[in-house]
Image 1 (cartoon, rainbow, N blue to C red):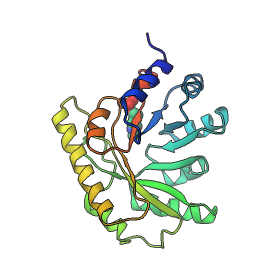
Image 2 (cartoon, helix red, strand yellow):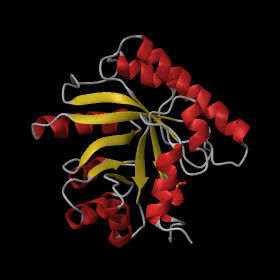
Image 3 (cartoon, protein in one colour):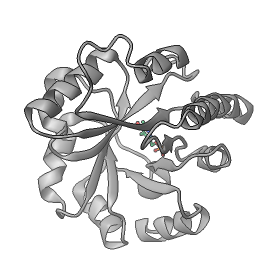
Image 4 (cartoon, rainbow, N blue to C red):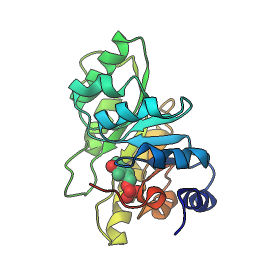
Length: 221
Ligand SMILES: *Cc1c(COP(=O)(O)O)cnc(C)c1O
């Protein structure tokens, strides 16, 4: 059986330089995260606020954390002090709450907007039109001066049918390139691809992949 270090090494050989590898460590104990840390991994992501807040103080301070789960506005203080990027902003309400928190705490928070892709089991995310409206500043009550929208995140349909997954990636890639072509400042992250589908995501322009199972093995729920 290969170790976490072996698996990370294998992934790093395969993933092109310029594509960030986010180690999705949800549901795994800190000892396993430390194995990845000792193999050089510094970028980790969690999807539950309490779990993130519990792990942060147990890991070295040079770890960079991302949040990738559904975030309720009453949980912001468990998450925003610790993360360098919220990848999973999926409502205007959340976007505005993050902006307000950031203003009150003298911070600028980097976020990705989540595009709703075909995944039937998650209704999470914005439509293309909603994302374009947000970027035009429409529907946002206050000036989002404490937010930096750095790009898009998407989760492809959960299926073995790679043709369906590819359609999802094509959709998000098209939107990403369209926004980039409009010259938006600092918009440079396309976060797509997980354990089953990251090579396809890379072929569709991913600048960041989020990999859990292929590093840590199956999660125990
Ligand atoms: C769990 C999760 C991943 C990683 O999934 P794996 O299949 O284990 O690689 C990626 N992105 C999000 C949003 C997740 O919740």
